[in-house]
Length: 285
Image (cartoon, rainbow, N blue to C red; front, side, top):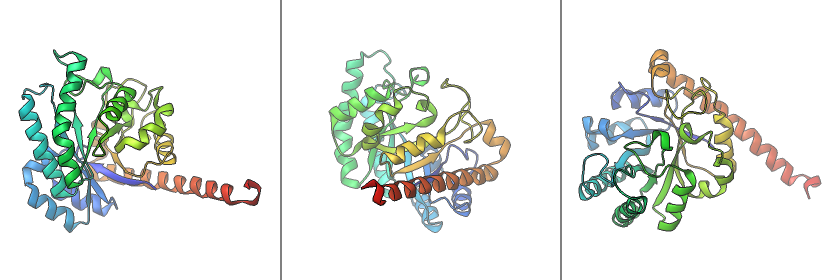
């Protein structure tokens, strides 16, 4: 099963009303909302628009910066995250994406403690209102200002140590699709995943443009298929951003993404049907 969502980062210049209308017209069941845009319309209006078009919220981004990387102190960042949890719950969002904050002048150990102290406050609140905190790692080359968790393995280790059902992980395939550890981590990863973000790129460097699927060199369908095969049943958020999308035009880009989602879903269904037939055939017994 593949449930596709569209990120508001992709339709950067559209307002929420147009995003809801066009996403629904292209058959998408959900949007990934950006708090900056959400502040333009307010929570009540946003919920009305989403309900009018029959859309869910796959995730809300973002909260965090607990290490002081965005200029706020720890208490201010936690208070902002509490506000974000309440907004996510009001909108029925499945997850709140969390950027822990960069290491800055902290030791790694202290950065870990700050994240733990923040989640000591936030996780129970999120659990009470049905929101998952999706901790988002960033590769070292792309982590400036965003996060000190730069590897999939270290992120999973932190989540396992914290061990709260409200705390999971956000996987950005654009960042980690070429990570040599990804395949081996799939069983553990899928147990913790709250949301998956997808965009294509050329080469293996985590720099440059977030391309439409099929416009780069990543094996996106194979990666998403492997996640589903290992049990991931959450949302796949399409988040291409940049000139590729602007050149295509937002409406045309949504059409391309709908075609990609349908193709992937069809191939997954065929693979699952073959597997069921193999398991239930007399020869398999």
